[in-house]
Length: 261
Image (cartoon, rainbow, N blue to C red; front, side, top):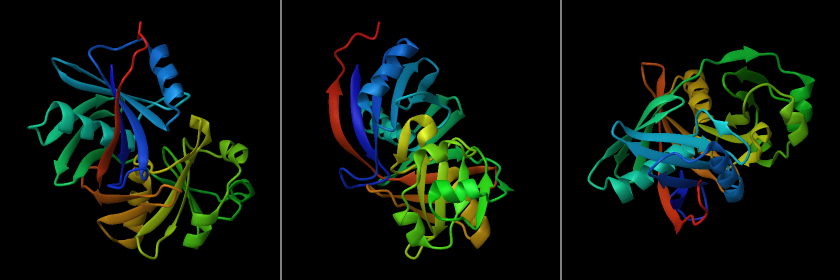
């Protein structure tokens, strides 16, 4: 089984968000995929199988399978378009979130992803305790987005992981208006076994949607202010979908020697 390590949402090695991408002839047992994702200990390991209908893609954190992962989808498209279908300029993956098409445009990989409805919810004392700063607003879709007045509050916060687990949403995001970017955010995922996702594409299906409407602006240039950092180019479409693009760089290519049986 071939495995690639790709840094997504960056062109600089050892920044952005690393994902492992495994390309296989057939599906192994789910337990094997969970154990390999745990062994990799990255925020996501992507598994790809090709059959007569096309490519199928699944994503696993070190603890569980997830229904959508942006950076591992970008990394998967990088692998397919540069190592398997070198003449193609797009690839479509069948996933738990439906068919996802990714186009290669010069150095960027443009993902067509779903948007999740956002509803404003009450700001609570529990949010303030978890993030260490009180948000001025909170919205909830698939993930929680807490909005803060100052960019530096987001960049410097050290949230309590146990308290974050008690908040709603799959992922708990902190976001603010940026000085050099339209928005600056961080994504915390203790419910998925990840303290902080370095650059979260799926969260920006909601973050970019929120800021685009708040700023009456499209596209949105977003920055994930984790230690590794990464840039996301986001453009809302008219059909409740969003285009999120970024660059990617190959870090390693290896062979998994353990039997998948």
